[in-house]
Length: 205
Image (cartoon, rainbow, N blue to C red; front, side, top):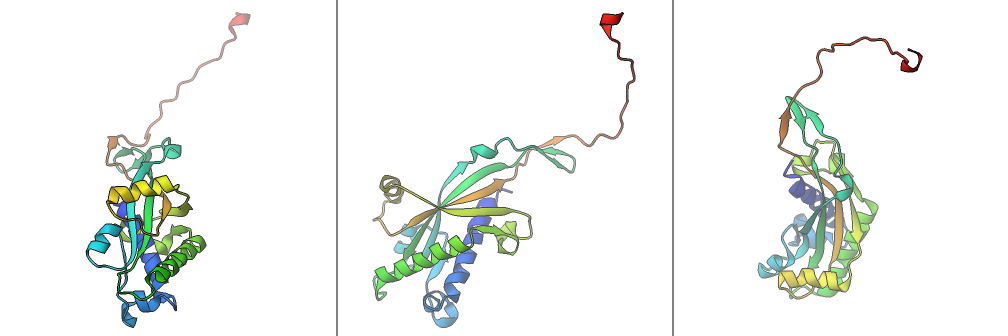
């Protein structure tokens, strides 16, 4: 399905939102029932800063084709054979953000990021009841991993945002599958016309 990207992002966001809201230290900041105003957003950090929104940004900044899974077989579907899904890897920039009036802002950002690192380390595989959006109720499964980025790589991301660097990490999400809409007509084999014959050893003829 072409909504796999946003559904995967929503899945990770919902998981982290629940972890942050239920944490004894961070709940007062993220849990609305406790007066919290921080949010978990799929918007990029610059958009959140410009709109004075504080919390956690999960921004999808890069999507690449997974070369290792391009040779997956076609899928048989009603009415024909469907091309195999396009396998892609997603890269999420995870940035904790605070407004200037939050007491001990830098310390709070580090606490938020620490909670994110802990949560995704303990729960790196998403499936079943974890899944949100159009992935909910499907047999889909994906993993997340913290990826190492050089200073040059992370600088390029923030330069593209035209924003000052903020404390952030990148996670690679594997594997989102974009289902093909191309369906080739064809059906199962219904009849077989067997042929019989005799194998002859030509050397003895």
